[in-house]
Amino acid sequence: MDIAIFTLTSALHDEQAVGATTAAFLAALRIPHKLCGADYGEYGSHDLNLIFVRTGGTEGIFRDLLPQLRRQSTQPIYLLTNGSSNSLAASMEILSYLRQRDIAGEILHGSNAYVTGRITELAGTGAARRKLRGQRLGIIGVPSDWLISSLVDRNEVRNKLGIDLIDINMDEVIAMYNATPTPTTVNVDAPVPNDEIRMALPGAERIYLALKQIVEQYKLNGLTIRCFDLLTAVRNTGCLALARLNSEGIIAGCEGDMPAMLSMAIAQAVTGSTGFQSNPARINPETGEILMAHCTIPFNMVDRYELDTHFESGIGVGIRGFRRSGPVTLFKVSGNLQRCFAAQGSLEQCGCETDLCRTQMSIRLYDRQQARYFLTDPIGNHHIVVPGHVANTLRAVIS
Image 1 (spheres, rainbow, N blue to C red):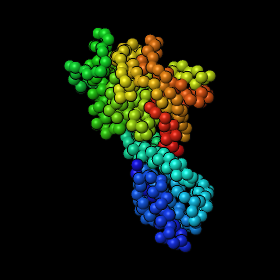
Image 2 (cartoon, one colour; image 1 turned 90 degrees about the vertical axis):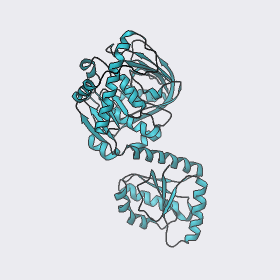
Image 3 (cartoon, rainbow, N blue to C red; image 1 turned 90 degrees about the horizontal axis):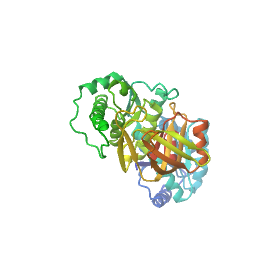
Image 4 (spheres, rainbow, N blue to C red; image 1 turned 45 degrees about the vertical axis):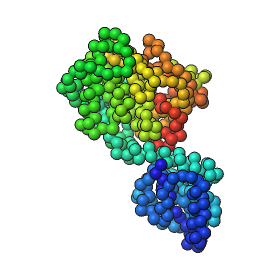
């Protein structure tokens, strides 16, 4: 964690006494940090920038300092206080001043365990935001025709997350595919079930190699591709390529779904995994059970996988992944970043029904009422299955 602590202190208080109180308080929190004192030159350049309000009488000092803070960072302002020397009262006046100006902020105050936990959460959020800034995500082709609600506000994405979206013509991928020699061998960690898939594997690998070259050419951190166009253009699917790219840390989404790609980027910044882009196949709003399915999943997110054809077309190579039961979070952001869904639950089992997309995850949400969201106010159809319970941090990244 990269945490910096800056201080606000009234000149009326004895610096030596305040310094001793500060040292004891910060030692009790047991949080690695850099104590910058009253020098705010580095403010905004760390995962978490805390302002330790050490005494009362600091409200005017903060007011005069605020223009500099906003020039250096647009993130919420976090006020740390131990409650001594009227510091909590001063923090409340400062936070009220911020609210009057529509500036987000929070006072970190309470037991040492609470404050330490909250600092850890906020530092994780800040680290995720810093990872996202400067990323370049490619949109290959336009979103699939059926994604009628899955567009993005590019200015909001750039301003809020610091991500640039790069448009790439589908013809470039096809040309790259045609220029890529057919590999003589394809290494997969699963048996090849039949001759049909054996014959499709070299073409699926060529798609992967073509996309890798696109990533390098455009210096991308990730992409989403109008993958169904590959069915007619090269008589194959991108499922294997996307599974491999995601497992290599390159965000790779299906169907040109831009909000899903952004959700995967946020998930990766928080957890290190892009997660599994999928859509609900069945929902039981009474029990909170949801069956999520798609024909690809990151290889590094499964314990094992099988090869099959792509479900809708019956051609190419699809991935049927299996992951042990455990905690997961269902996640999706809207294209304008104004809405977010994040619900925690448990992966109960992975299935292999023949009339669904190949990777199938049966998930039980802990709050069964959240299953109604999918039936009353969903953010598109695709949602991301993210390993672990990270709903709060995912939400906080776009807050």
